[in-house]
Image (cartoon, rainbow, N blue to C red; front, side, top):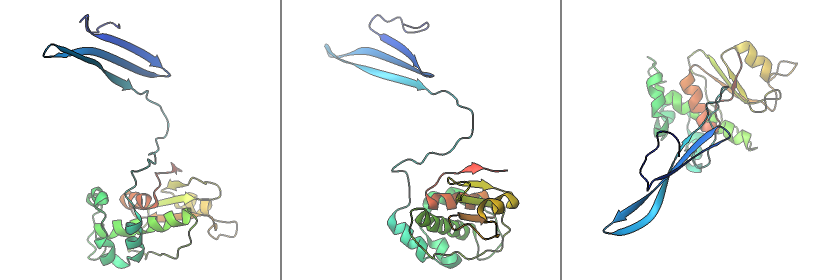
Length: 205
């Protein structure tokens, strides 16, 4: 029993340290109306802090994008359609998009970015799609690449020079393998990544 543990003679406690994880298991017999029930074990796991770049994991079952939503997104065209997409799970991004533009509201911009991500998702899975999203009257600041020759797992940057060098051929054309998009804000970039089913890639600066 480790220091500071309960002194109750009916309490058994074991602490195990394994590969940086500390696991404590406590068993306490319980009685109810004179009948002793089997011990229950409770555990506390403390994970070590690992330095480095954190990447959001892709967890099976956590993807909010299903085939119906993909179909709706691909059919959407223009700010009215984008605003009507059922993207409640992206509502937290709306407060970060402020614009006085009458048509391209925050909801329309999130929907547009999401559609671009869905098109990227299909390309990443090997499907051919001619889905396009129109340009909008905002200056791009975020460049999100999901795949290129030099970066198969993609990258993101706010530096246009780095972006264009990393997705272009020697002749200046986009690499056929490259899948990327640019956005004015981080919020739209996040909507794009959700649509694509990918976490944030590495950051180049």
